Length: 209
Ligand code: TMP
Image (tube, rainbow, N blue to C red; front, side, top):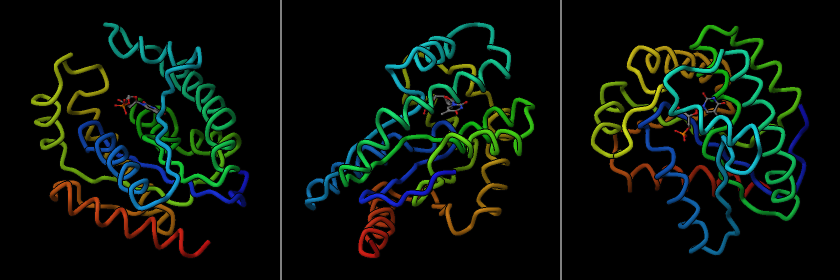
């Protein structure tokens, strides 16, 4: 894996659907900007690459893509994301906050039966290392309640209870395996409390640079 010896800072939010990643990644970008940092939000799957568009369409199709095809599309989209967004932004000295990265592939495509160690290895070949991964840890029931109350377009194929349990189990395994890289935060806490914790983690890293 390439290293991140560039002037920027690369932060990833990870978690099961309904964990609050999107809310927290947007909020922290706004907060960092008000504090004078140059922060940028990005997300996977991207909205611009062909594989990213194909994946987003597939979320609402009745039949899931075969897991190997899905994995390849996420990988191709990630190559696009890293090359066209993350690296240029980091080289410009920005704080890049991404809403999902390769740990999502390990957890989600792993939960669909693909060997998670293989997924990890393939991703480590093409992805640059983040400085910090924030795993928003939430019980599956809480996540499902949030999904049901907050979204209007219905629950997508990724959001079934059993699969979320498997996804969460793989995230926990990854958090155990990479304790220096992945910080687990209790995502049932108040949004403002979580934001304070996230800000502390990021400013600590920024001060070390
Ligand atoms: P979102 O809920 O963050 O918009 O993500 C869309 C879905 O894509 C979510 O259910 C998780 C899934 N996903 C994967 O299965 N593998 C991946 O590598 C990524 C980035 C997302």
